[in-house]
Length: 204
Image (cartoon, rainbow, N blue to C red; front, side, top):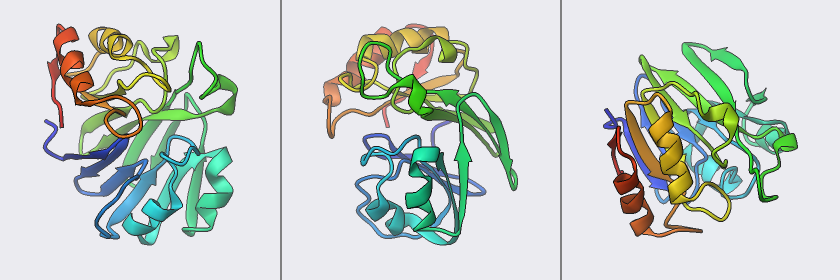
C-alpha cells in the first residue's frame, strides 16, 4: 500500500499518484520541479525550507501551510492556502483534513501556534502525516489508510509514544518518520515495529 510513498529524509515525504505531493520537503538532493502541491506542517526550517521547496516546485505549484509561513510561501509561489488545525479543505480534486500537532510537556511546538498534521485523500487512499506532535488527545481517533508518525523523540513523540498511538488509531499501515537525521537513529524504526502489535508496519 505504500508503493506510492517516497520517504526522503526526516519528515520529508513524496506521494506519487494522479498528482505529485510533497510534505515538508527537506534535504532534497535532486532538482525535479514536479510538485503539484506542497504541504508544510509548520514554519521550522526542517519543515518549511525555501531552498528545498525551490527544488521541487514548478510554475503552478500550490503551497498549503500554516499562517506563520504564509509570507515566506508567497515569495515562492503564486498560490498559497493557509490552514488551521481541525478543519476540512478541498483543492481541485484533492480533499484533505488538518489535525492538531503540538507538544504537551515541552515547548518546541506550542498548541497556540496552530501547527498541523494532514490527512490527505489522494486517489482514494488516505494518508495521515502527523507532523511534529506528541501523542495528543485530538489525534487518537484518527482514521486513515496509512499513518506516518514521528518517532525520534526530543521534539516529537518517542518510539514508545508513537507505538501507543499506532496501536490505538484506525489505520491499515503505519510508517515511522522523523528520525535518523536531526534526532533518532535507524534502530528507532525497528523498535517502533516491535512495539506495534496489531497493524502492519512498513519502514520505508
